[in-house]
Image 1: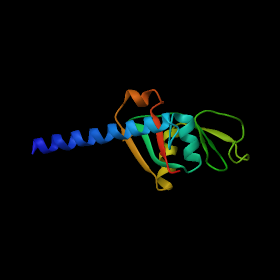
Image 2: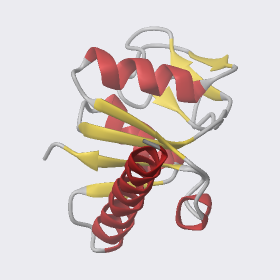
Image 3: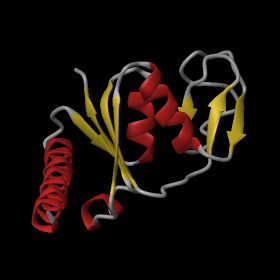
Image 4: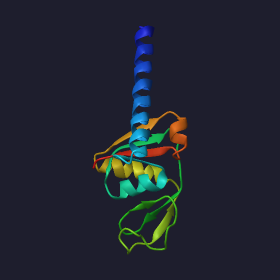
Length: 130
């Protein structure tokens, strides 16, 4: 029974490592994935995220548009660049808003253990729908 449990844990870790490798490789080739807060939030805003990958415990302040709900890692302007109408307001947890947006649009969210490959990318990335 313990051996079966250990095999399950190892299989889950291997699947997690494969997901991270696929994400990082695809993003490096500019082929269906993005890494980092800015690019990932942009993909969330455009409903392009098939699978959001975040490091466990990741939190980051952000800015959200009062009109369209677009999410930004930093304040790029007073008004939203996406809709041009809303005011950007500070949010304490942009990651939670990104997770909620992806789930509302039927995307997947994978929370992974800390990984050196993802740490270089601010702990976040996304595999894109198109």
